[in-house]
Picture (tube, helix red, strand yellow):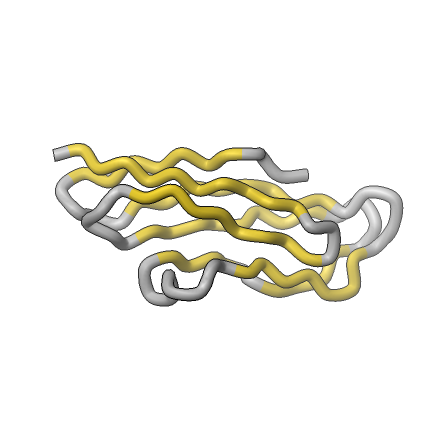
Length: 92
């Protein structure tokens, strides 16, 4: 299970990070992939972006954004079609 929204705040253009937890409920997940939108490579990273989970297992996923401009985007977890909105605000 993942949150619907991950709100991040960057101060002075520094990298901003947040976390969410993926859990396997009702059976193992052999290969998950977390996809980021095209064009955000280098500005948004997800770690781990791929992996496997045993039934009942979980993993903490870290989302890091390096941008000097606020934006609203999303990451998608497959299988499952889970979408997590990523909101970046900039504090000066």
